[in-house]
Structures are given as C-alpha cells and as structure tokens.
Length: 303
Image 1 (cartoon, rainbow, N blue to C red):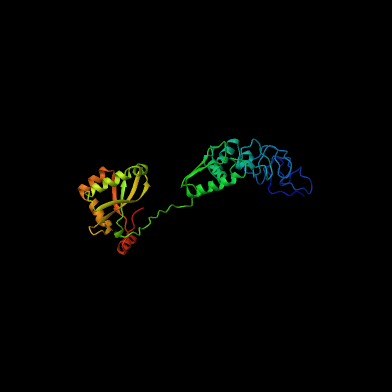
Image 2 (cartoon, one colour):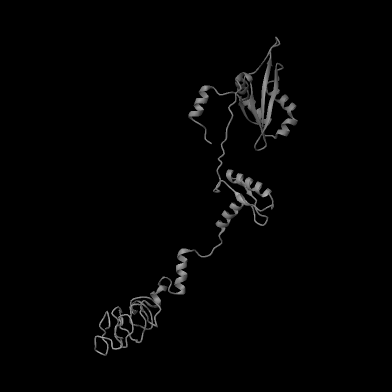
C-alpha cells in the first residue's frame, strides 16, 4: 500500500504510483511518473529522484523550486529552495558573504586607538625597557604619571613613549591650589614688592636696592629699610619682602605699619619711582580680619 500526500496528475491516470513498492513510503520518495509533488510550488520536469528528501540537481533544503534558482526540479519535501535560499541563504554567494561580513566588521584599518591603549597598558603594567627588576619601579612611576595626567611613559626601546595627559582614562589626581593666609599683623610692617628681575640679580644688588628704596622714602635719616626675604616667582620675577624701622630722637624705634608704608608706595609720584626700579606690584602682608575672611568665604575668587 502506498502512502502519498498528493494525487499525481501524471500520464498514467491512476491515483497510485505504479513504481512504488508495496508498503513503501512514497510520498517523499521515488516515483516513475512525471507527477507533481504535493509540496511543490511548480510543475517538476524531471524524474527518477530518489531518497527521502532528495533531488540530485538541487543543493538546498526547501519546499520546491518556486523559491530557488535551480536548473532542475524534483519531487519531495527537500528539493526546494535551491542554491539561492538553501543553507547558503545566509551567505548565498561570495559577494553576499563579503557584504554580510561587513555588517559585523569594518574594513581593515590601522588600529591606532587600540595600539595606544595597548601601549598605555604596557607602560603601566609590564614595561620591558631595562629587562630587570627596575622595570617594576618604572611601571610604578608610569602609573603615578598617568594618575596625575602628565609626563611620558617609557616601556620599550623600540616604541616611542606614551604621552600622559589629563584626558587619559587613568587620570585620577586633581590639582588644588592653596594660598596660606598670612598671620602677620599690621604692626609688623611687612610690604611685598614684586620686581621684574631674577632673584640672583636682586641678591647681587641688594645693597643698592636698599639705598634706592631709602631715597624713595625721602632719604630720611630716621628711617631704615630692611629686607625680610626674597622668593623666586614665575616669568623671571622676584618677590622682595621689606619693612622700615623708624627711630625717634629719644632712642626708641618701631616698625612703620604695613598699611602706612603701602599707602606711601601707592602715591602717583612714588609709584613711578618704584617702576623705574623694576617694581611691578606692591601689597601688604598682613593677616585678614574676621570680616575679610567672611567676605572671602562668601564670595571666593575665581580659579
């Protein structure tokens, strides 16, 4: 007894296939007629296919030739989608494979960013610059530079060092500047003069500087100019802290208050004389009053 899913419309005119063996499962198998398969979407033109799913001309797995681009057809469930939509339906042709591959990967380019990350990681963890235990010390130094966001990380003799900036992913430190509040009182008489000269030049000409400042004060014999200290500033400038001692006729002495001395230096004609000596700025060095501290905290300066 044959078992078939469709009545063939072949030339024999009979419902049962003449070549089907008795008791066979012929719906998907062999026929000797030109009958169409029940699952085929177009009329077959070849015969003699064998096997449960098998067409010899087709390479796909499908439901007939209607979906494929094959040159032949066959009966059965699996002769179907053809070379166009068979298992190759996901990459049917070489050109399509290339296109599909492009969906998941970009064209080959120089991985500069990747190399930068690899070089950075090498500089921070496994430098091979010296080839001994000193490389471990170098790695810690590179880590410190990366944390504060500046410097160069050397790690290999054949590869340029890594430039550490504040944009690097390992930057952690943030610079915070502090200005120490002066604790000097007005009676201490300290005034800061900023000179547009190097500290070495100021120190070598300190005696001439003291005499020049004494002249700026009017050459009064009861006044003595003293230098408290000097400090180098950026841009080849120097900070000079001075105070003036006033001696009275009865032999006592006192320091001229800082505010008084500063007010004298701020006079227009005196300020011009100081500029001729190279002074670019003058200020008092005194502690802040409680009211000034409160105002500073409520309205902190920018930066």
